[in-house]
Amino acid sequence: MSHTQGFNMTFSFTALLLLVSAFIYAHGKPNIVYILTDDQDIRLGSLDVQPKLRSLVIEQGIMFENAYVTTPVCCPSRSSILTGKYVHNHRTYENGVGSGCDAQSWRDLNEHKTMGPYMSKAGYTTGFFGKYLNNYAQGSSGITVEHIPPGWDRWYTLVGNSKFYNYEVSNQGQSEKHGSNYTEDYFTDRVRDEAVDFIKKSADKPFFMYVATPAPHRPATPAPQYANMFSDKVAPRTPSYGFAAPDKHWIITNGTPPLTPETTQVVDELYRDRIRTLVSVDDLVEAIVNELKNAGVMDNTYIFYNSDHGYHLGENNQQGEKRQPYDENIRVPFIAMGPGIPKNQKTSALALNIDMAPTFIDLGGGEIPDDMDGISLKSALMSPIEQEEAQYHFMLEYYGEGHVAGLGFLHDCNNNTWVALRSVDPKNANGNKDILYARFYLKDDFPVQQSEIYFREYFELDEDPWEKVNLASSLPKEQMQKFEEILDTWYKCSGVSCRNLRKITLL
Image (cartoon, rainbow, N blue to C red; front, side, top):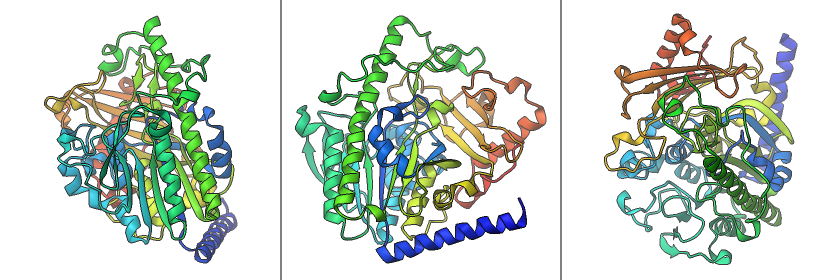
């Protein structure tokens, strides 16, 4: 790139930021709407069944093709979204209270430092609607529905984990119980209606709204009018569907029985129900956009659409789950639209779940806390092309539930603890590769112990995008040592040191 080109790019980006700043100055602080789905895949085509999302948001904004979560399971990822921190810093390791999910440790360490309080401090009316953390107001968590976390002005939150019927919510600290009547109780629609009502009542001042639907999480119960849609669909037969890898860690090689005609049918039925529930999410998106227009605030509102992690349906011979370091589990939809964001574009720039909180705070004119591990995506949103020339790196971590006494195990989370390094070089600008380097541990402990490493995996995703061939045994010793040193450093990072590690040279 010439000096003149570099000057022009810098000038254009600076000019764009000035225009955005002028717009926000004229219209006041921008409103921010964050819509989070539960377990929604990106690699298996779930966005294809959401035409309203496509026309109203995707085509009006930008899609990040390299959007990832740093831990592929609900409560840890949601904790990372709320705090802008890796799991090893917010210390919610799994979905159980014994693993920190809405336990007293969460409230002592994190709850006063989530995006809610920071957005409130920045001058926003805040609202939370839907699923918070998996064990919110459960008996074992030590709190009841009266507990409203600090920083949230409007609170309409599910007690416990994802459900569509027969659930309880905390409605501004009061218990509200629901049954199985569709028109009164279907939870995606209840969240939709509460979010619309919040916009109606808050549109005269800046608002920040976090909308967390239960879809398409199990039990993946579709609304009755959509229950027979997609009857001819089956789960995508991807290159790794039903593939029993001989050279992966034990859960993949011998911990999961082969797919049978019976289990294949189960996978296909789950796939159909999952995408059926997303049709109601499409209705939710439409209702929110329509109300923003009715309230006259659409032009001054950012909308973000995201998922807490991905999902696999038959990949690596496993049925329906997550909790693995592979792309079907860690890659997620991430779409943004709003003032200054180009329309109908895709970008290869990187976005992580830990980047959500700093991004919202930055867009809202607040001060990003020094202890957040993520970065603001404001520059990537406003000028995506200029952000694509870098190579990106991030850490992945997951802690199995085997160390929590008395906790019921899912089929693939006991003795499944791993730490991994993921590198994305979208434009091949640095002559490097997209890689995944993971190390697996014998025990489900935190912190992980070097002496417990029992297996390693290494994939070069440019040639092997479905991570079928483990190249760890042929990795040069010097390169493996470098990966190990980087992971050791990353595992101890916090705040600025985590952000700086995204700029290192790997290969």
